[in-house]
Image (tube, rainbow, N blue to C red; front, side, top):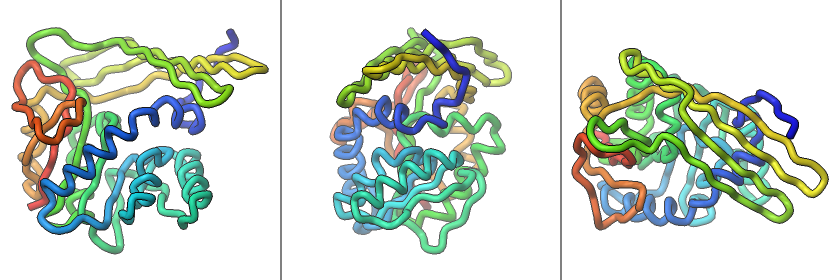
Length: 259
């Protein structure tokens, strides 16, 4: 199979297919989280690192006003093209999620699939949380989902999954290349095997991510006092089953409350 070394984010059609399959569970959970944890009625939503907008346009279809930002112009263009097909204006824009401003505050925000860990330094992560604090009104929330590093028990290092839409199938595999616990940098190889009726090829990429134990994340939050941890859930997205974070926790959605 022919292989190319390119960013998976530069291929929004394939990315959207692979990462868009679980949107129903995420949407139901987020809507319930807004009802449960936001102080007032939730109308305006923000999605940093919105990518292709797999949730963004569905939030708009559900009656919210939802905007998004992403650093990748191809993903933003894909997102806005889909919004226009559904009768909406361009609600996504290109921006660095460590440095952005909004004209009006939002009621809540969400970022659910590990994008936060692309911020590879403590300063970048803190600047992101400060920018989000400036964008979310007091009493609002930020639902932030990512993988923690357990300090006891097993870890899930390798994943593979398949998604299909019509005649297009994408097989994905992700596995660790190397980890540096001292620098808190982990690199993961990721492959998209693309299968179409007329061709098949592979996209090879490497994701560079910052690692967090639960104590390291709590330490980060203390550096940005505009936020507090209100609750936490796992990736089963059961709004009535919040979890207690400990050394064995791996998959978590933090509900951060804007003070």
